[in-house]
Image (cartoon, rainbow, N blue to C red; front, side):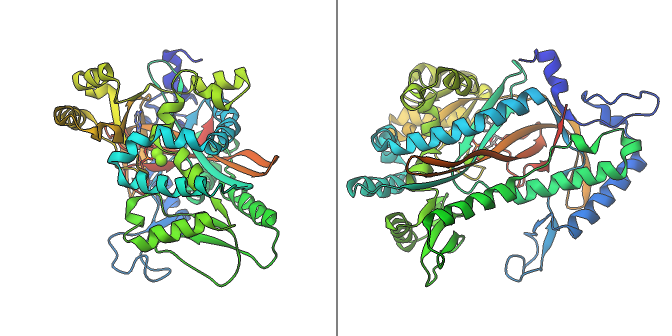
Length: 457
Ligand code: ADP
Ligand code: MG
Ligand code: MG
């Protein structure tokens, strides 16, 4: 492991070679002395490249955006230069990807564990409750999913104090941004190639991103296992779609938030899909494994041992767990009320913007405790990770700002299995997101973070 002093240099903006200084290390703040002319040039080129290569998102301010194809598009928010990232962390995250894939699958097969662990959450969180109801129905029918497809993303931050790579969360549904992540990687390679001499950076050090190709391959692999030439892949977006052909694979790009179920019709559709012979990505069980509550339960002593056999693997997985606590633990609740800045309070939700921090966290805990209500069971507490910050150029809406920023690094995974045959269990590219160090939350779509790529050091 890296000592804290080195850790700051292990994660920072890839630094251009500065005239006179001549250094190409990744120390913090090096970019601060980049000539303004060069920055302006890079920003303009990056904006043109983004428009030409589809590194774009819908523009919320345009009335016809999302309604008419090709109308109301805006470049995706991106960091101007890649984030330097130590090979030690990269290797660790890559090694963990297949272990987490396997763990998700094994946990998903233990229906009693899922029902039991989430039983108290269910009482106070109706969304998780509805998902569990579908899961319980499948258990009652003794429905077996022979072919299982998981497209996952395990997210990490480097803990500045210890230099450890810690898992933020494990996503098992709608693991988005793979297309944009591939795009920003190409953007950075291109910019660095064009300005190789001035920047003094090697474009080959930007790690290529295979997320799109590998996830598409896994979907196609699942379709092939279904073994029906006339079948299709159904992608669930908003709202729910249907067609007249047999469905081999259902991919949920939606369905992870209560907003995706505005009426009973959507719940009926989810149940219908779960009952069908189609391969679900994810199945209801895989979906539930991705909840924060299960993440917290797996971090308890002797729980990983129920699902993984290899001691060395168990140690590797455990090493990336941050502090995670159930709110039944009164002493930790008291600590969080005393020092809320050291914790994150998380409900069972996805998509960013749902966590509670700081004074809000304290007040929420105090009021939940006062009520003596079961509402506490809707949440978990997590150790707040403080990643090392560095100065970055961040571009949004055509404007470049310089910010003290931190990064979150995700590794995509794919898992395809038919009965005892594991067909794919792989890491599949990555997502690097950078946000102002002062912010709590971190989604790109949610408007907090900027897309970035990995500059391996
Ligand atoms: P979601 O499923 O909504 O993405 P996350 O657990 O990933 O939920 O939390 C959202 C964001 O909050 C993360 O992207 C990260 O920026 C921040 N965050 C979450 N957990 C922590 C933590 N333990 N320490 C620091 N920041 C965190
Ligand atoms: Mg998530
Ligand atoms: Mg997240």
